[in-house]
Length: 327
Ligand SMILES: Nc1ncnc2c1ncn2[C@@H]1O[C@H](COP(=O)(O)OP(=O)(O)O)[C@@H](O)[C@H]1O
Ligand SMILES: [Mg+2]
Image 1 (cartoon, rainbow, N blue to C red):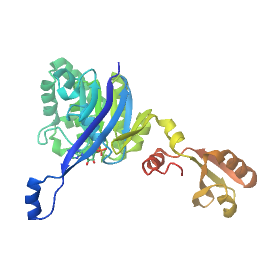
Image 2: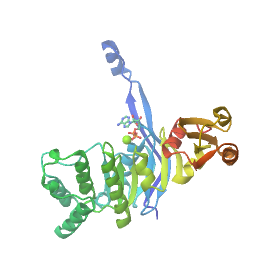
Image 3: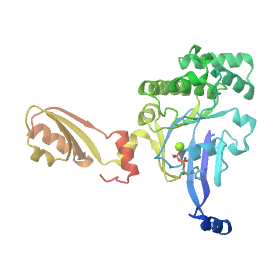
Image 4: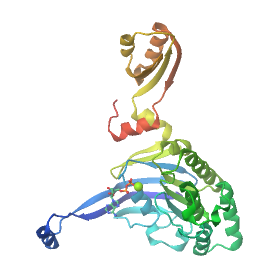
């Protein structure tokens, strides 16, 4: 059985159009004009137990709305949502004990109290016995490399430390399914990396099913083999991360180091020159021409070193979202 199954999920928000001016305001009492924002517009996918899937898309794509429907914070306009065999919006106790939603921009911890007080509250909410609570807490503290900071008021912690506490609070009951909405947002590179390592370990250790939203492609590259991409509430890709660039980008990147000077004019016939840095040149070459270009470079130019790569994930993503898939 699938752990998560979405079928034809739609979530529309009705927004009332405001009119300017006092008279217009009165008028709008009688003649309300509204439109529907199609935040999620017919999305389907399934996720198996233990999978760690990246969920990406530009701002306003519908990611948070989808995660809220999956965790039972929002009632779908239509479609089927199934998580661990539950209908999330029913918010059954057993369901709530099996999932967690972590939002990077929101905190659930008491600001003026030590984080450990919030953990204790969650212990009660999730009805954990003392032994299980202590065991889970110790494990999480160890995995996240957290020490006595749990006894400090949350407001005195750095953003990174606070995020670690958020994760402990969210995971204290060992949820089987974890929805992460921008968990690394605003963190510095070192802390982002620590978070990633932790999420990878948590996924492995507990076979937890994780759906991860992030703006940082490094998170996705390092953690997820599979990605689901949405834009304007619609699903546009669901599959292997590696195959993404094969499907959407039609060029490869050749980096060539020349021994000495080179004929720029001749070089530009091979492909698009992206940058020149002394003797190092970066070229974008159409996929179909890559082989021939490499041969020409080696034979006709004095190349010291040659490297062929797929475009970076960031570039592929922008190609997809800007609809420039024939670049
Ligand atoms: N409560 C709401 N009322 C009206 N519109 C909303 C509401 N929540 C989200 N939206 C709209 O739905 C779309 C998707 O938003 P969201 O799911 O937050 O996207 P993402 O998380 O991918 O940035 C956006 O156009 C957003 O403005
Ligand atoms: Mg969002």
